[in-house]
Image (spheres, rainbow, N blue to C red):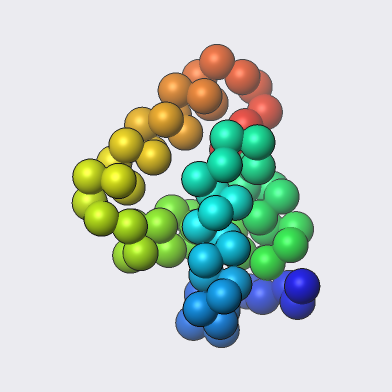
Amino acid sequence: MPKRSNLTELSPAHVSEVIEMALSDHTSFADIKAQYGISDSQVKTLMRRELKSGSYKAWRKRVRSFGERRDVYK
């Protein structure tokens, strides 16, 4: 998959793939950056834009709680 650096350059299929990766508890922001070239803040922006408000808040809460339990996570 091509590396990208701008959210507007992502195709709808790639946006779906990034969302799927971000929702996975087994994929880190570093993995997403390596594959698509977008930073963790860009992933958060994408998720905020694409998910419903409640879904985004639940995702951020889950990511934060995992991050507090493990040194290397999202």
